[in-house]
Image 1 (tube, rainbow, N blue to C red):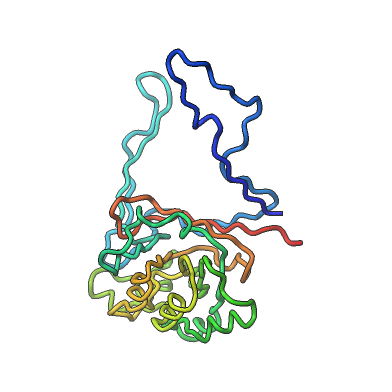
Image 2: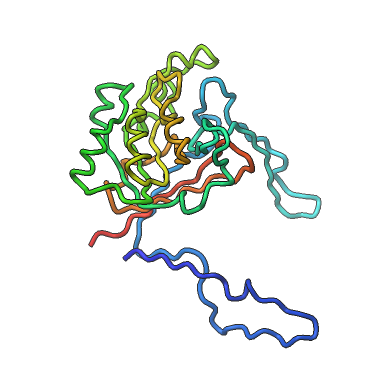
Length: 277
């Protein structure tokens, strides 16, 4: 059975004033954090390295060693510095990315970064058309099979393109870099009409998929981004391992690097799947 137990630490809230009586500390303080029993946890994020896929106009991820070895004091020490664009690898698009004045990464409510996973499998459609856009009909078909998309859900679009990572040509449609390469991008996304349907008729917290962008590769106006972000619905891109998730029943927790004022950032996302009954 999957159980979430969130407790505030009893000790963390204690204040000791000079001359006052010492606080009474419980002999067995309540547990803190998230306790999960019997669940399977699926990592939905790719590691960042030299093979991480970024938009063709970006330089990518770099890791520079500052120190790796034995210090003059005789103990081992390691430290690095890294650099990367906000949008690349498994990452979040905050609403401000395409909607002026909307939420930045650090302004997103935590409750909108976790929720029941709704996994819409469109691998068959995308195998026939690598520029496929998930439609309202696809979403309605999911609901016909599984019930209405619940309030607060995180909708995950499984296109099957995760199997191509990190092959840039197969995953994005081109391995070329630079502005000219953007015109050669081919991968699935979400249709703008479906984005509008989700944000106007359902109350989802976020949406994600296993491709580089929530708009399909040939898009030049990014209408899906704009439709979602105008309604403060963030997007998770380049998700991993969606094929391991059931259509319903999993819970997603997707926590980005908290970049103040950021339009996006690296995302560590996991899915928690309760044991079969």
